[in-house]
Amino acid sequence: MIERRRGAVPVRCALPTSPAPILLLPGKAESARAAREFVREHMGHHAPDASEDYVENVVLVACELVTNSIRYGTEPGDQIRLVLDANDACTRVEVHDPVRRHPRVRPESHERDRGRGLVILDALCPERWGVIDVVFGKVVFGEVTAS
Image 1 (spheres, helix red, strand yellow):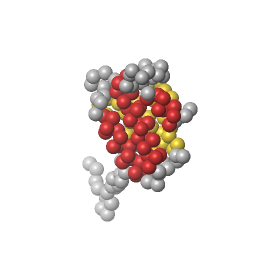
Image 2 (cartoon, rainbow, N blue to C red):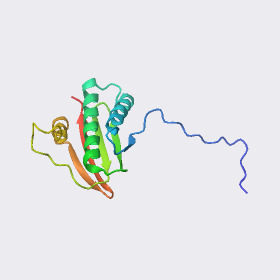
Image 3 (tube, rainbow, N blue to C red):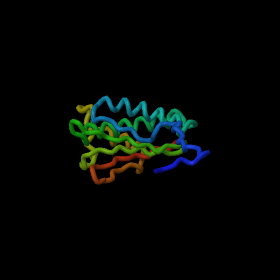
Image 4 (tube, one colour):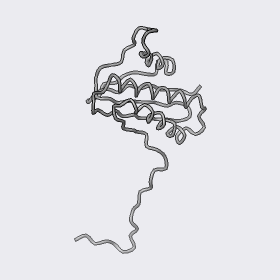
């Protein structure tokens, strides 16, 4: 039998005061909005002195990565994972999805209303974005720096 020691103070874990850096999202179009809200809240806690332009660039990169992941990296019933590592100088945005197919730049077209996500990544994360294969799919990431 285990006996409790008298006078021993039970250990309590402190509750986190800021949002976790990971958000699980269903592979549905509505997830892009949830991702934007999550990023703004997360940046408010982890990069409180960041400029509005910097925060909005991080939001845009996250939204593009989530949208591309939903459109090209999921099948019905799949989930994606958004992971942030943020501070006032640089934020890494990662989106994990279950499909190994890598994103590719498509030729510019004025007839299509899509296909610009990687162009946006090139503009906001020049030479700081890429794809990593993982056991169950891939991770597409972009690193946004404060200007």
